[in-house]
Length: 213
Image (cartoon, rainbow, N blue to C red):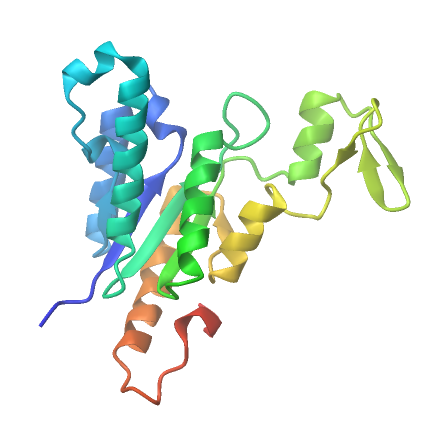
């Protein structure tokens, strides 16, 4: 009989940090202490010779990361993506990380055992970061909407990141925390609730996607 487990994909700009491998290993170790199985993009083995052709390497990396997320989200286990949403090279989250959150969000429509959980070291709302970091506070409100000096609208829905990302997190039962450790603990707690749902007899189980994790 297959043992149902909680698998966690670690998404974020961590792979660009000076100690990228070490960061991933430490986060996976922390997850292991909580009884979770961590997966980090650098776990994928890309042949060194592939980097002689940057485009080939890019495709191999992207494909490997998508396959890793798919493996985390097998229907016989709980699949979690812990998303490092901390602003990176600007006032918003890393673009590749946002894609990974979206990838998992799409999978969650077919697999209710997927959780998207975020964390960020910047507690400001998305609109606050836009107004302060890009426009130096020179924004205006009109009929409840926020606008930049050039007249373009700034998303202002009270979330900590773009509404598509925050919406996916909330829809799957996740939340956004201030630290990785808080997010990881929630992944354990929410994941265990989903596991309990999976073990209920047929006919008496509540669909996990409707459960308030």
